[in-house]
Image 1 (cartoon, rainbow, N blue to C red):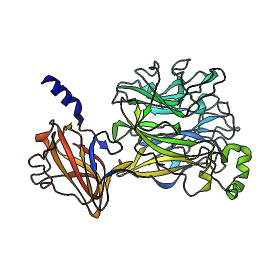
Image 2: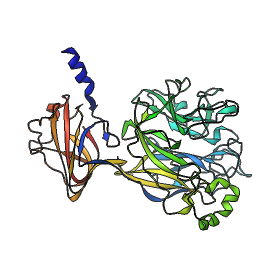
Image 3: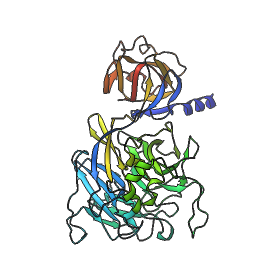
Image 4: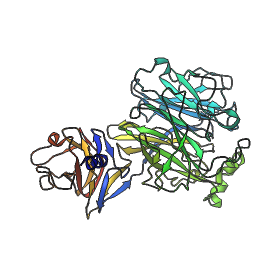
Length: 483
């Protein structure tokens, strides 16, 4: 009997009152007539043009942070008008915004560039760290104010690896120690880190090659570009890197992972990654002619193409879920985006409205027209549980929850609907929460409480193993939460 109880407990997922998004099938048991559907971000205008002499065509590796306490958004990025990777010509630039939409480049007065300090250069003459400086705000309880901002930056090979930096204001930085803190990886990319409330430690995601390197001296990588992960309690001493696994074959090149906790569900890590297609040339002769001046500076410009993809993982795991292998942000209509290393996303998805979140994507990389474009999604709207007009249903695996009411982020057509039946662990409808009792929803709302004939209060069954049976028609459900 004890063995049966133990097995049963292992099959039940406690979701508490956390928000769950339909980006993977972790909680899904059966689907009939429903699918998980990816939603593509919509272009929302230019956020920043990399048009200053110290920025230039190779501006890249962008981080966007929502500083809620200061009521502003902060942006960090590499400026490089044509210098060799890891050289002193590279700088780290800074921009900020009150709303995440309109950005300004403040005159920081920190570094003299071209005879003037009237610029937005935050770091200069700090190679190789200015190549890929990637900061975050440390929300660890009790963190000293002088270490409120942290960052990893650096290159591998002779440069040693990633070094740790700290700052009180996000503008003036110092190294935590002289030697690198993470040394095994292919770091000529954007390597991201953050404090995880869910794991109670620092987490870093950085670039590796699945086949390792042939020779440590010549550093010739093999396999495909991919991602490893390490953790730390103090941001200085890190665990050995563990290569992430995937529910899909590791065949495509993931150049940057841009992995961060999702602000509305921090147990879920969202990766707006860049898929790099080396050697895939798609431009016609006319487009190549238009790009002739840029290819003189950057001959590889027309040799590759890339796009953004969506990957997810759960806190504490070493697997990326890739339910959606198609492009998340495609290159689009403009031929200038069908070029090498264009369409790389910035690290950071941020909320820019009550029902809106924004992400940012590099466009026209390697060209004089280089810029950063803003894209928008519905809040929680990376993907959804979807049914078309014919309708369908989905039943979850057993879960336990805490809370009094079930909140949904959903959208239906005028002819559509969403209804939910709560079942016991064996799939039997629970009295008062049957499909016939449910007050069907036809609406579009980011926070709608669902009810039954007796009302919306579900506290009587909180803590008990249950299944949720979702019945949809012409509808999308993006997330749910017991609250």
